[in-house]
Length: 275
Image (tube, one colour):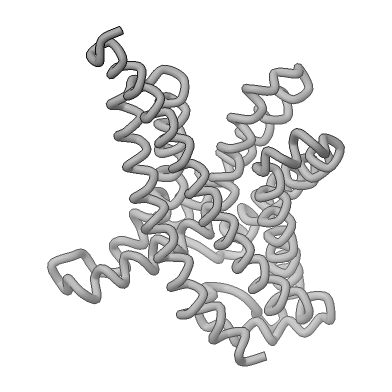
């Protein structure tokens, strides 16, 4: 067999390997980021929320609307929301671990139910805080609303696929749900990365406020688009397409890693140091 005949097969295998490797790299970095985020929630919010010391939330000056004196319903809703965020962060990450899915299906099923149920509840509470409590307004409020609608839709479709035993479809919808359920996490990472880039480039880039309005949608739509490209490359992509998606996913992972590090050292760690 000639070298020319072997080349396409080698390229195909190399492209498939690159795609899988880039996905594993993304997941590994995401797990680290989710673990740090969960640590922050458990250390900063859980003790004060469970003890009823809601005023302690005010230490986080980055909150748009956290603790409000006299707003019992709003404070309880926010407290419930952050507690549910811990469940979503842990449960969503566990859901994506293939070894757990293969070797401990019962754990996978129960964490999946907890993740889906909590994500749905958190999205409903988020909508209430946005439109009733008045946490957000204008374009950011619309971004939060679209994210909540996608969480409800994707979680429902993931659940239906599981019930009908369409496990391939269930896996895809569960991954989509994971992305949109972590919209606020991606929002924070994106703001950190943009701020770092802008600190170097300067006023040649739009101000943080302008980017914030756009990124309220991009925080979940951009990762969702990357996931769809990954699905497409995995199912029907040629060698060039798979290499391209692998490269794009690796770049996205690098930016995500910068955002994770910046969030931890610039926001989370300083807040935890105040405890």
